[in-house]
Image (cartoon, rainbow, N blue to C red; front, side, top):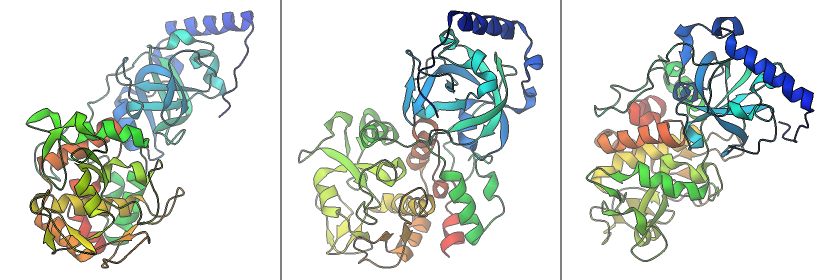
Length: 393
């Protein structure tokens, strides 16, 4: 995208203002908005991202210039707008990046029309990534106003998975099994907002909040409720545990698998260090600071209450990172001596844990929170734990 500043003449600005005024006066149907029945919220559009053509309504927040950057003033180009379901939205993960092609720039470009910020717009186009972010490209229609009221977005549910999960999100996987299911799920969940490693701190304080104390988070292996503000590197602080150890594939903490909150969890610094990059398996000596956990020279066993959580995080990583988009092809196997290979075990034990410990309300809330507020994608094995056996047997 060309982000160079465009210099406009005084007459050019006057012409853009006239066009904008005309657009306000013209009914939505005349400007080409799609039918009311197909209008989506921004949240629904972010969840789809499968190339389909759809109409979306939202409020103009600003001009996107990068995956996690949206200008709210000092606009530099007319080529894109970020819209959201709320006019005061601040989280880029809840914004849709809309491409503004040449046909629409005189009216909907923010450089020429800065007063458009905060206005409601409706756009029709292809729901596909833009700036490596949930987007709408190649608009065939754009208009001011909201058109019809969009249907409500999916909301969290306390009932066991898969009841209440967003069927539309998994539409491409419906009826599939085995390799076909795996391919479909990869195509669905790979569309996500990517976080920086610093943003992970804030995300975990939200996703892993203690239901009984909103000032605290629950530590994954220790099970301890601890103040959100006690994160850091001290002996009793909590830090960011990579459940898929980052050395298994050497992806580090760069944006991508190293910052994917679906497998990052709060954990006591010393317990995190003790687990290190060990594979998962049963047995070993008790871990003093993590009751119910065990470890030996080459493996780590989490407490019973989160065994399934661990398994589903590992399986998510294997489906999400298939060797494309510059990252290694992650895959579970039945070994506990994988070293730096992009493999993690033990698969047979992980599948058993997935069966033994089904998703609970905490895990379901976490999945929903990541979907709604942070990355815009879901862990399919939290919604459908039975898919693990369908793919891996």
